[in-house]
Image 1 (spheres, rainbow, N blue to C red):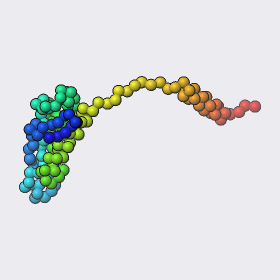
Image 2 (cartoon, helix red, strand yellow):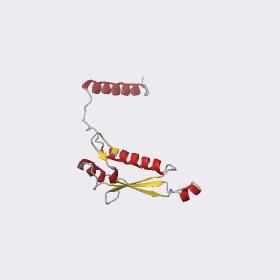
Image 3 (cartoon, rainbow, N blue to C red):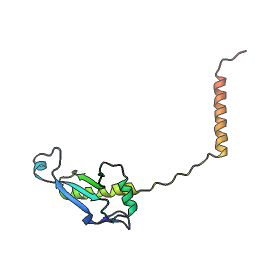
Image 4 (spheres, rainbow, N blue to C red):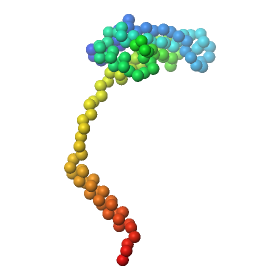
Length: 137
């Protein structure tokens, strides 16, 4: 069982693992052993709350298919078990990232004293530049 929060879980029967041969270099081991993992997670058929499903389905990510299935390919490690754990960890990170609610921004104004300081600095800077000009006697 994958824990997303204290109250939200992904149950093992909702995850589908397929062992495939890893890509890239690696010699004979890569050609013989199916150590890479394809993790498939159907968003619509899952037991996640509606808020989670909505956020995941609206996610603009290449790992989410048009039919609402998250596909994660894990092939960083040489053994299947560690790749499974890596795929599950990446799925949890993806879901938590998608469902994170950002803090609402509140518009603020600069204080009156900071406005006055800014204007005074501008005036002083302008005076400094004016003093650099040619002096007529």
